[in-house]
Image 1 (cartoon, rainbow, N blue to C red):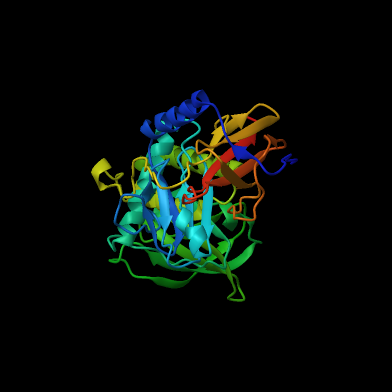
Image 2: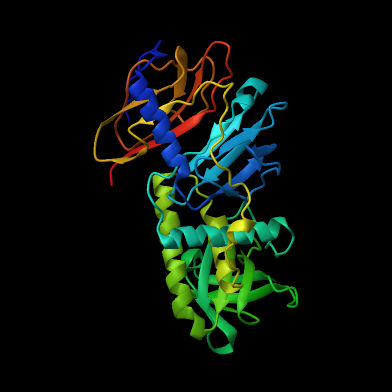
Length: 375
């Protein structure tokens, strides 16, 4: 990917251009869009205008202004949006944290399934945060896999995936049911003799299995949803669609927590956990205005997907402001390059982060634009 940029540029534009910029920002903020999810929240974060501290799994409105605790450094948060965007924000010193971060608006309208999938996942994560739902043991050091399987005779299920790639031989598994009424099982033996394995379960439900080889070495952390034959068709259709969507999003914006989200989605299906109602969603905020701060830089064209080489212009409505930016996904600092010419997007993807500063004003929040070349 090749990026062309020069330095030392001051934002001064005609009143027409300034009015257009402000109008564009307001129009974007007024659009109703399904919220995204806060993920891997480290440090104390708030949405501008709200009191509550954000936790992993909370809803985040596209366009919301995020404010880390400026009295302490080392904050980070990942935002996952229903159009597939994944954005990491972090700050390490007080001045950097004091700027805050603007969540991007959606560059495309999510389909109904995508919005429903994330709403279901948020509901599961919220239940866990509130202690209202069981959470399976996670073996972070093991290869992880998730599957939906139909119960057959003798409550056996047929499992492919990572288990199918194990060498033929004898294995055991420890079984942790989500249903606390069912007992844990340890060292349950099975044989791998073909392109799949058969496992015996207590019945329909959710299970976390740790698979061991004949040397008692842990091999796989398997999250398994076992359903009755009558449920298979509808659940399998939703499950396959969710798998494909998360895979597509991760290929576009790498770093999606696929395993965690697939497990949460399976849990929502099997336990029939319904999405949160609008009034139960946390972290949704309207556009914030900071009259004492420098205006936020705006991207022209808007972030999104383009058919070929694209030039991106950054504009600022504050006369005399300087725009600092980065193109390597890191946060812009005072010593980051100063924008003075359009940034050329070539290759596949470019993430531009920028903030503006002006004399006698606070720095603007950091804004993010993700530009993709392709379909």
